[in-house]
Length: 249
Image (cartoon, rainbow, N blue to C red; front, side, top):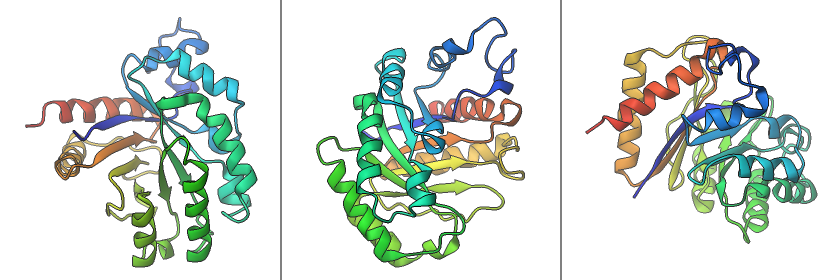
């Protein structure tokens, strides 16, 4: 039976403290435990900027309940510095660390830079490498392209061959395409009017609830993360969307 996961992109925002989401008396070292009382998934942003050691991933595993699931952003060293070229060694290191999450690691998101235009041969090589490296511990893969040239039939076909998802990135500025290329859909809510700073309206969330219900009806799992962290909008919107989905017919 298809499942839907709703959470936020990151959870350690200082501006969520002091009653916005985290109680003033709650120390930061207990934020993940508090977060996991409300949500069953989180997208880890930290792994994009720097790769935590394996012990850190293992700690996140131990601090969350058995029903909890993680998505992790792939290293920017791979996507922005190496630009998917000659990545066998850094990719192996990334997987070795991230798999400290064991079965709770559901998806790895690869966010490409906006200055990186379509390069089909390089993407093909990287997708094959991903499949090889993750063979012993299968993990779903999603790609967020930030240049419009990637949104083409050849890329869709390649992702479909590997069962990798084309990330649906909703914002007012980023390229936006809704196309299922895998047995799951990966959605990132960056903010409708202002990037990272917009509060989604009830009407917008109802529309998204219908979209997600439609994907579930097609037998697709859905992972959805709110990245509009300003003023705690991400938490508010994620809770509201989950409520709408739970009450949908």
